[in-house]
Amino acid sequence: MINLFKFFNIKSVITIIVCTITLGALSGCFGKQKTVSNLSTEEIGEQIKHVTNLEEMKEGDHKKLQKLYNISVDEVEDFILFTAPTNIKADEVAVIKVKDTKNVEDIKGKISSRVEKKSKSFQDYLPDEHFLITKHVLKTKGNYVLLAISKDSDKIEKTFDEILK
Image (cartoon, rainbow, N blue to C red; front, top):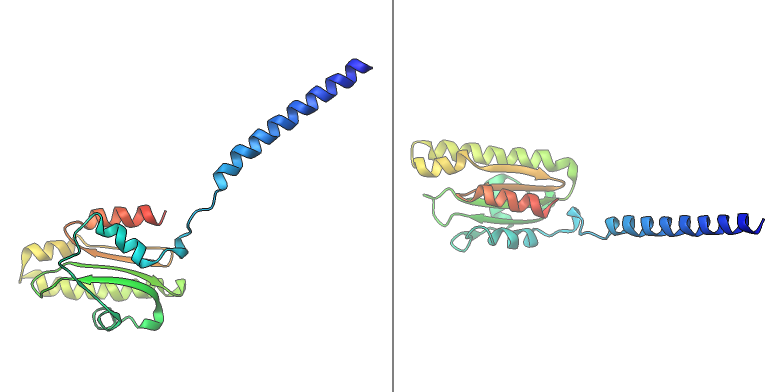
């Protein structure tokens, strides 16, 4: 009888140890991560600045956002916008955090309209700049919208994707 009692105790102790180790290992997988909705566009912009040079570009404000994309301040929570310093350059980088996720596709459509107009105006005017427009990146992740018209648009897209995993 005592041997049976010892057998159950040892078996119970081993089971408890195995369960504790398993729970400890699994709890490491559930660490706090910065959620997509908590990132500011400035943080994303800083990471983009590491992969491309935005220093020569002009930083846009709410008026520029409204003028270029027909997007009102009420529709966005936060944004960064960089445009080419002259009309003979096509470069443009924008990261927009939309207030309501229901409006993300609408915002993307407005930006797409801008890209189409820009493409038509550069088509016969400056072929090298038109090429940048044709290989632009316009994508969404959560409530974020990215537009990248740049020679480094692929790097900008990769950075955007990595930040908003």
